Image (cartoon, one colour):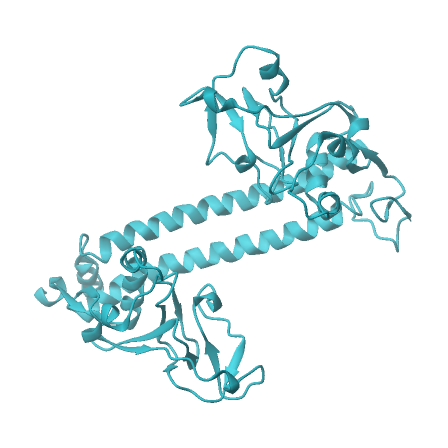
Length: 420
């Protein structure tokens, strides 16, 4: 039992073989499958395995299959696993555990990533050399069974994280397709997606659209278009009304982000009232990252926009404000922002330009239907992202507990042996 509970700290070079990368001469590189795939650095890393671009016919340093690929240049400490033999350049090292479980070593090096990053900073070029890497302290339980149990626990969480990431990626692909289909073809009275083979379409300034749709500009469906106030930094406060900035908008959806919200206690005067938001207001970024869209939700409370955001108050009773938000977020909407910024000058849109933006206008019940479908997809992605955050926090906590010996897995080994 003591073998399982004792821990030791040893230099990486004593518990693993290290292979520092060395780039072959460039004339040996090729896009053809001649030789082995070549990796220069972590820019070619995927979620777990690398994605090489070229092959090389003259190996100098080879990372064998299943070795840990470790980035020794900025960002130092990034990891991937070799799913086959690779030739590695100077930006990488290959690590193969000898006196420690290979997958335990992978988890421990991941746990140390922030420490590697800190240790490599302070010079003009962020990097870690072979001597520093070889001396890096590896903390591990002496018993291989204990190492394996730690790997089993952490790998279970890793698998859950990978599954959630795959679901998020799937839903994001679905959303891209939904936006393209619903916001260009729409849904007919039977709930079916229209097509030109089964429905009538017509030409419009925004391309081909169903004959049931109209095209309107922002000015014709709103009675109020403005931008936020300048010089409100002096009104910043620890609490009070939300002061909405570009950081509160995103290209992922039309809901607001609140992870970086500033609060203000605004002046009681016309300037404050002019920039006060109400539910249904459509917000558009008009400087820097043009065309990010947000829609003020019901029950939002008191909030104001800054000078980098245009506020559009839609009052046409036949227009769903969230539909307008989704349409401006779509390819047809975003292409208008791109055209208005083709000059290459400093990014910025004035209010007349915002008023001239075109939006499709299906019948109101169809707008509502499209909005509900896109909102439901967004809610699904948000739930999955919240689950991913929980899993990531769980993984971080488990690494802190298990890879330092703070929490022992020995009772789990005892239970397993008893059950056997």
